[in-house]
Length: 244
Image (tube, rainbow, N blue to C red; front, side, top):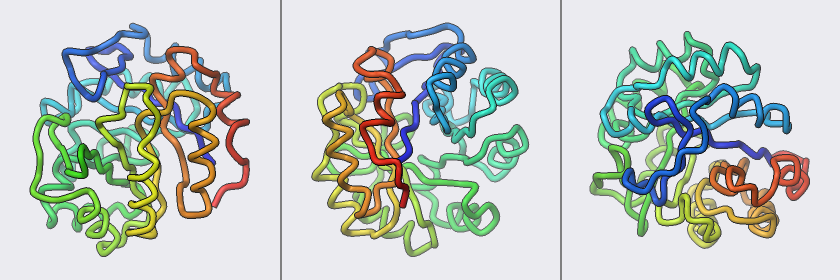
């Protein structure tokens, strides 16, 4: 099971939001590269980087911080936030991003999603960000007329073999992950899922680890790491080393 540290960027700083609310922000560092190096030193094999300014504005705004992380920290990166065109996907991949995350436009524009999948294949991944079972977009400020499960099934039909699933109501809360929702998503889609939102302690990781055989491939962790609930090394030990 892969543990992926989250690095959320806003105004060039590393922050965490509570349930995606921009007015409930906590700044953890003004130096994203330093944070990335810290996680790398603890054994990170991959980073989940989200441009919060990009997610709300519609175009990435923290590319300089992204470039510095890629250049100075030799760890794979998935990046999202404001990625809403083929050109932006191409640009990000040229910068060295391993995998580009699509969200808002992927949920609203099926033709774009199919075009992106055909051209970039597994170089893109879709993040389903849901609250009460419904998909939210544009920095989690707007909704689309579909459920998370419906969207996940659409992704499978297009050919996606993996997706990111975030329960917004859990994100940044340290209240525990939505195990029932993750199980339902795994059962309904039978695609690999990277889970995000709510991890608070090592017991949560042990519970999620039991879903590996069902298709859970990785866990994104943010606030619990930043608040020192456990170290990245401890998180890795809490889950089985065997990957599906």
